[in-house]
Length: 142
Length: 142
Length: 142
Length: 142
Image 1 (cartoon, rainbow over the protein chains, first blue to last red):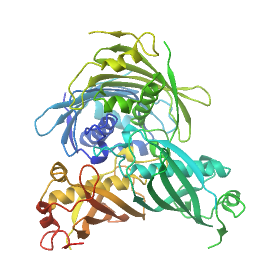
Image 2 (cartoon, rainbow over the protein chains, first blue to last red; image 1 turned 135 degrees about the vertical axis):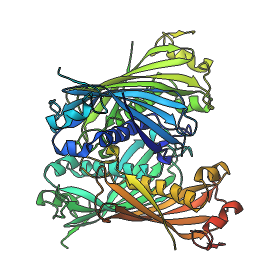
Image 3 (cartoon, rainbow over the protein chains, first blue to last red; image 1 turned 180 degrees about the horizontal axis):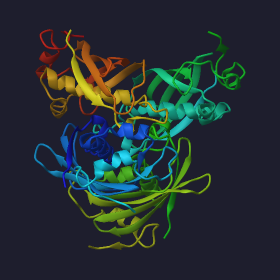
Image 4 (cartoon, rainbow over the protein chains, first blue to last red; image 1 turned 120 degrees about the vertical axis):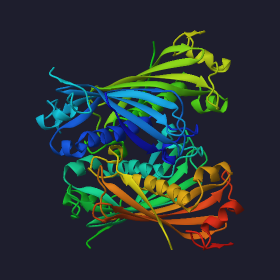
């Protein structure tokens, strides 16, 4: 399965007094990478929200392997590992661009919700993007 | 003029690789202190937003005097220095609780706006809170 | 096993355009709760760092059950679920104080490291705090 | 005087429940833009820190003109407006790339400090970068 790549330059704001990136910021990078993923497979995430469907995070896992540091360029490799009518799962790998060192890997599970937070089916218009012929994985009805 | 006091414990997340609090986080503390200020003078800021009036920041200034560090307890002293029908100005002093060391001081200027971002007059209901008999300063029509 | 409780008031800065708390911020609350946990069982986390031992996060999981909103008061219930000579696992439950609604639960796994990031054994001085007679769980040698 | 340009894509994490970018995040963008500025005029800011000289922020001002929104591309135009032996002042203009709308403008004043936070003179090695023949402004002794 294909994946997309995002490039992120570590901000000073993202470091903590240990001299490395604070652990919660990897989740922000996952979000940046998800939005890039959507753009690359053919739609803007903000348009999907404007159409009334949001991808609410219901679960996140992250394993930290090596610390990212200020000014490092980080590659975030993103793919969809499961896509159903009401949920989508993304997996991420974060690597330092300079030496390909694995920094962290993780995943997020999302429920498709309307703006009020009620679970809905992914709108027809966006299903193709996560289909076997797209970059994403197979849509299964649940 | 009276002022309110907020107490904030510095979070690890708020430090940077210099071992001190990252400069943008002082603005977050100003926000926490403003919300406390509203509560103390008699209303909940979230109710004012629910009533359709938001205090959009139009200007901020901050002068940094000494660094705050992880786990420091910080006192934020907040007062209104000017209140007009469409704008409110807050001033803040941030001091380390342990030794009263001045860490930073600053101010924010706010425009009263509706949820669409259009400037409006402060709703009648909230004017009294910023009146001479309240904790805040005198409301003047502009 | 006993647990400690932290109270956190949701900051405006912590919300996103969905009108709820952005998912990465729950990890910041976990950090605040961990530091409170250490304080409550008898030491200051910053002293442990000054003594050359840091608790580097190696894994985090969080499951989101209901959204936290601006100005909500959140109770974070924290306990140690495993403590070995080189690793400590914390578990967290986040509940809205007003109605005890479960917002999220999660856990973090930490490696005891020196300031250079090398794994070390938890210094003798801090072992008792995580012992069966303390608030924490049993220390096992690994 | 010349200026450098940084491009920043607004992150979901940077928005708040008003649906616009939270005000403190503009200061993070200023930092990103400063680091880019240093890179463009010929040195890496992290090397300057490694050489023992940091640019500690002593003052910041920001005026907000129009809200930035999720996924907007923002251009940050950065220039040095004053450079002395111990202080450097930067000015910033933030514009929405799509329509050149001015979003905010501001400035930061920095003291050159050693890692302990003591004010020092800008190391010889870095003075040329802020000289009249560089991109920056004239170095004056103070």
